[in-house]
Figure 1 (cartoon, rainbow, N blue to C red):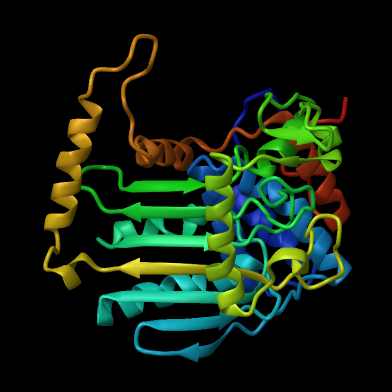
Figure 2 (figure 1 turned 30 degrees about the vertical axis):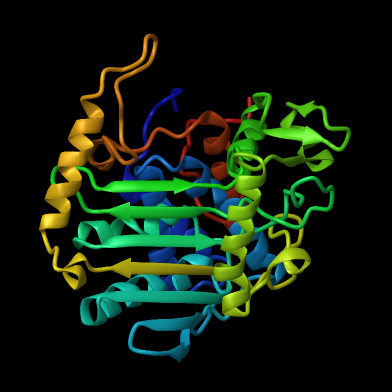
Length: 357
């Protein structure tokens, strides 16, 4: 397959689903997870989409992830709930949390649903964009699936990238969708650079000597830096409290590195929130007011040498529609890796024209 050639969304989705099924995941669950994984790539979150298939298959094969979980509600009130993911693929528990949060917000104005005994679930944007599309605000956060960050000023790895995402409706084609790690760079970006044989920019990681680390193959020798120094550290701890401790999930030294350890349950903690503007007397007026504020921001003259002002989420809808129509162009290293996984799973290669040469 020529460099840059695209694969049809349905073809890639079917391949991922069959790969998961080869490791014991039931057909319905495999289809749901595959759909969310490909959806991540459709919206441009390539570091958290099908790129993660190798890790998920490894944990399923190693026994660290339950292929056939029973997702249950462990605790519940009118506006809150706690979902037990039964150590299954994280997308299943988080999708259930998102849907339940939206349901509760429709009834009570707000829905907050935590997750315990979960796993890595891809980008948080998957679990907040639907709220905005339904006219609501959304928030989601997670304890990272490995510790790569020390407490500010320390050297022990006790924190993950601990991401957080926020969404809001806005009149126009694109809702506001903001998804970020609390570190300067997400570990997924570093893993993709390693796969592609490219260096990291300075400022992403430092070694234990405090010097910049730019070789992604040496990532285990140092640690990620928090955004904004102590501010990013504080935000990461706050996320650990509400996504981890509050849910009875792992935080601090209890966090399991889901890449290097394929046999232990991770007890990953997350939460999803939905908030209905109607509960504040706003209704559709919120989206109109947000759009007006965004228009003012976009109209701000850019600084010399800067691109025009953009809001998080701008252009995502059109880009996703294009990818759904034209297919996904995955990088050559990822295409070769998916072919290798196909052979491991006894499946036909999704990119038959690609070789390891």
